[in-house]
Image (cartoon, rainbow, N blue to C red; front, side, top):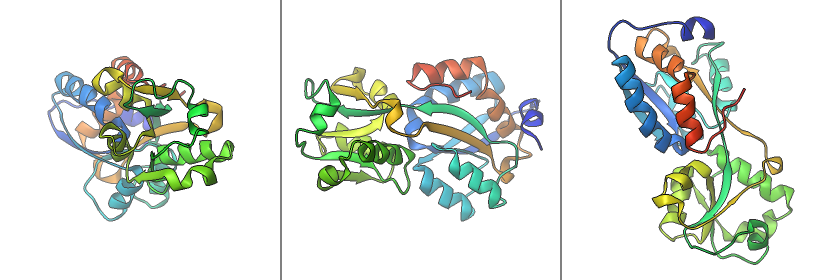
Length: 242
C-alpha cells in the first residue's frame, strides 16, 4: 500500500489506534490527540519512550499500529525488518536542540558557559535518543567531548534528560526546544544550538504492519499532514520538514 493510498483513506466508523511515540513529542501529542479524536471519533492510545527502546519493543512484537520516531533511521530499518509498510514513511517534525537550565541568568551565551567548567550536564543517551546523538555531534564539532565527558549525565530518553534538569539533578542539559516551551512558561536560561553544528533532527512516522488495515491508524497518518496538525506542531517549537 502506498502513502498516497493511505493518506486518501477515510474512516466511516470509530476505532482505536495504538501509537509508539518519541518522548520529546509528549507535550505536542497532548494537544494533537484531542483535536484528532474530536474530528474523527477515533481514539488514540499513546506509548512514549526513547526512539531506540520503542524500536526494540516493536521488533520484539509490541502491539503498535504506527511508530512516530525522533529520527528517520529506525522507521527505515523497520521496513527492512519486514515490520512496517514500504512507502509509508513520512517526516512529521524537525526538532530543535537547546541547552537549557531552570536557573535564570545562568547563561545567555551557551558556548561561553560550556567552556567555563560547568558542573553536571544532562544529555540523552546517544544509543537510544536521537537528541542525544545530535548533542554529541555538537560537542564533537566543537572539540568539547573529552573535556565535558566527566560532567555528562545520561538519560534513557529526552524526557528523562529534561527531568534531570527540571528537578535540579543537573545544572543544565541538552533538551528539545519544545520541552522548554512547555515547561512553566519557559523559565530559566535557554540557548538554541546552531543548526549547522549537528545533523537535522528529522522525525519520521511510519505505518506498522499491524496498523495497515486499521481505519483509525490510517486516519491518524492523514491527520498528521493536515494544516491544523502542522500548525500545532509549529507552535510547539518544531519545523515542518519538506
